Image 1 (cartoon, one colour):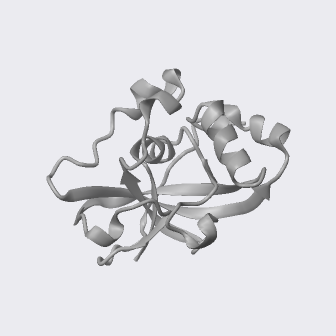
Image 2: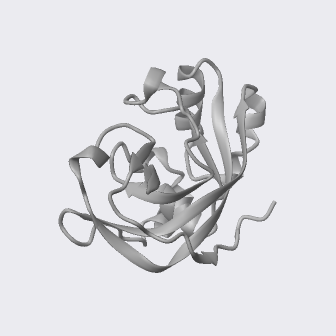
Image 3: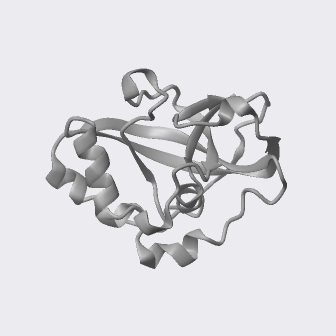
Length: 169
């Protein structure tokens, strides 16, 4: 089962409808370090790997800290899945900056990702769904590391209620 690894703060923003875009440059463990869209539907796998409170806008933090994904030792709670509505590579920094109100990251982290990846960044526009029942899955060694995608050793039906975008354009 395909899952997309993202900071738990961002999974919360997506799952609560505050954010509906994902900006990605790729993971160190990915082929050539470049991001590649592996599927149009995937589970959202919240991770603490590389998550840094100081890289999130302070005004978003109280909202994002409310969700807990690691309540049980050696398990992660999966609550959401996403469907890609649109995917594009952005190469104009001014266009990337205009997305500021639509995501939780501070400008400096987006700028760093953009410039490190040859002045481009992948943007996914997603519709997020809340699963009918959250699933606590074991944390396996193969899920660790700096990579965007993991194949989970579980079967979870991608059925749920759509999350309403609360950050209307």
